[in-house]
Image (cartoon, rainbow, N blue to C red; front, side):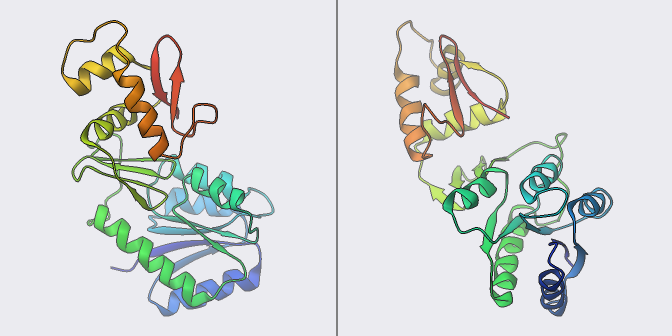
Length: 235
C-alpha cells in the first residue's frame, strides 16, 4: 500500500527536493508551501506522516502541528533552521515525533521517515484512524507515550523505566487527562486499599515519577499538583 506523506515548506527548493527523494522511494507526496493549504489537505486526505517546516509565511509549524494533533496520530517530523535546544524541545512538546535541522542530507530525511513509519505501523498495523470511540490502550501526551498492553513508557522516543505502581499512576492520570484526580481516588485505584488521612504514599510516588519524566513541580510539563485536592495532567 502506498504511503501518503505531507510536505510543508515555504522554500520551494527544499520542498521540491523532499518531494523528489520521497517519490523515488515510492511515497505519494502532498506538497505545500504554506500552512493554510496544508491544513485543507489534512482534512480531506488520509496521511501517514507529515514533514513540517517551522518558519512558514502564514501559520507557523508549531501551530500547524498542534492543529494536526487535535484529530490525528500519524508521525510528525519538524524541519527547523534553528539549532537551539529550546526550539527542538518546543516542537516535541507540541506533539512532534522528531526534528531535523537544516541544512540536511535528503537521504537522512528518507531514513527518518522510514523509521517513523515503521514505528507507526507497528503500533497501528492496519493503518486505521484512531478515534475516541475505540478503546485506548496507548496514550500520546505531548511526546509521552504510555502503552497499557506492554506496560511501556517512552518520552520523546526514549524508553522510561517505571515501576508497576508508577506506571499505574501515570496511566490513571493520563486516562483522566484534563480532570483533577483526588489523592484519595488515585491511591485507592492504584493500591486497591482504603485511603487513610495523612497518607504521603501518593506524593512520594508522584515525586519519583516526576524525576523520571524530567518534570518539576515549578515548571511542570505533565503532572500538575492541585494543592489540597490531588493531581492532573492538563490538556
